[in-house]
Length: 304
Image 1 (cartoon, rainbow, N blue to C red):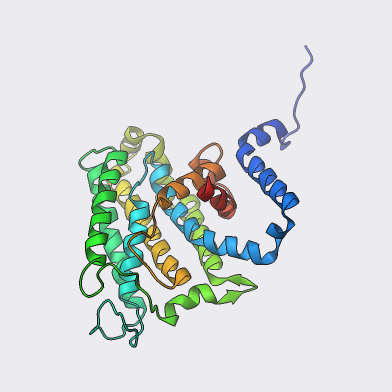
Image 2 (cartoon, rainbow, N blue to C red):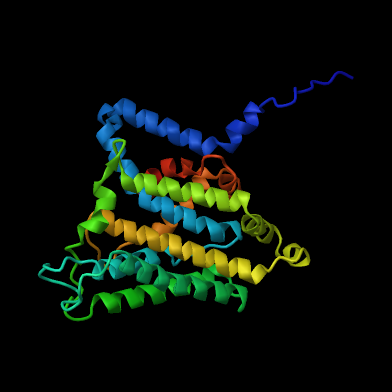
């Protein structure tokens, strides 16, 4: 019987097209838009899209950790908003009229950043403990946490003398992260790509990253193999919270202000981006040599 043998290393074109169907459709849609409106392909427009998507790329990198465990975090967007309000309230210029803390001296910019990341890390720790120790479903635990975080954010944002007014007057040593350009692109984009490379390295070149895949694949088998499943789950949610918190900080740098509505539905944009760029799974995307491909899917997922 005659058989058609594939040469070693040959590419299965049909399988490749099926696996990357969503990305190909997205590229086709972008091509159609450019054909209809050529101005869309101007470098100025592309730079704006990259800058606006950089923050959501970092959020998508964070949400990928619970996704790889087979869970999710529906509080991700609200953590972005809380992080934005906290870092903005502590990073105003000393001469700004409507200061959140009128008597607060001008702190080194690293101090507000550390305080903000510490707050969101505690939220991630709580999520991880509820899921790992109390055996709560990630959907339920994080959905409830989103309400709690938003409530805390609103109470903090409404305190005197701010009274829920948008926070402005952000110092230049934070906003320069957006205004500064490197090779014609905002520094925010390069920061986001740097985070993508670090996440890729952690997931593919460290024991911790391999343990994440094991736990996400089969928790019982991971326990038998000696993996501390609870620790991995808690660590993933802390990392995720720190990444979305960093997204909130960079959103303040990009917009030059903050309010309690920041981050609304960012978690859905991030999850959508992971799914679109991770055909057929988030794990496949994490193993990709170019994880920043998720950046391409963010503008379309945000407008879907």
